[in-house]
Length: 431
Image 1 (cartoon, rainbow, N blue to C red):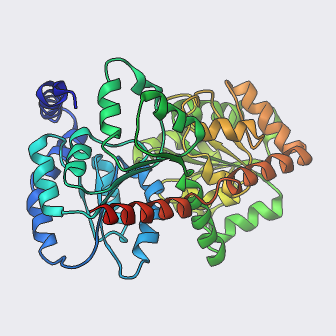
Image 2 (image 1 turned 180 degrees about the vertical axis):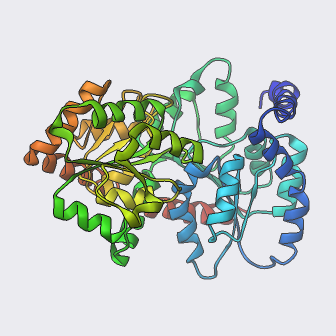
């Protein structure tokens, strides 16, 4: 492992984090939350005796969706192993602590200096370590290898930036400490091979497809709806065309408001259900001001009177709301990148996104398989909505393609679980 990482990079990053925490609340929460980490895990593990210990690390709450199918499968094993879930991100950690109960323990991951990692592993003593998507840290990987603890990176994606001469050797050495890498696609596998990684690399798929399918099945079987019955009945009886816009940012909302407020009467029968990426009180109020008398908050829909815009003013509602849509717009494509297109797709909804989706394999695949389209401005958005609204055969074609896009990619969880068991058995045989 390049010495520069331990001698220069780690001290510099820790110093910058401490300085940044004086001005950034997220950084401060991450540092403060780790102060008692070693004491917390030492106390917890005093009561963990003869159970197999599995450590699962994710970067943030988004990657947790990829981990959940594996966590749930592990939790169903007999005897049930002890599952310790770690996060790098403060928001991910806080959300999981509040909303996810399957793991036996949820903590921060330690900072990746040698001393912190050594203390952490001495207390946890995992029998297996799993990493999700990309978040593998050099010292953690190195010390797991030194201790003979098998480790797997699953639902792995390869970022071409890892091939930069400045970081190529560090990334290659880090991945080579693992027991196995399970990638989402063949393209990702080839990326790791170009980097020179020599550990076994197999294509196993993306567990997020399995996760959205499970979530849909649970909601459908329970016949539950976030949208109140009075609203659903109104939309059905008036035959309104429903556009659900999820995870929207300012530019997304600007384009959508152009369509809803300043377009010809051909959109008068469109009802917009809009779920902003951050439904803070201020953001919701801004949307209420934008749409005026046309808008109502979801939390106040008991008095729904046919408003054309319903603003989702709390989190955790979007996935279920997609089932009410005729089409979906997924935000982020005019800022940092498109958000989750699997959620509307699994509900058989055609998807519209903005132009910035080059880093997302699934968005490119969905568009390539005619389950979604990309737009670059409000005119294109308006034409797309109009086409879906007036051409039912076109709508049906895209809806079917979106559904098949998900169905064709199911099964990653089974493949990954088989690889986990093979790795554990192999390492046991070698010990």
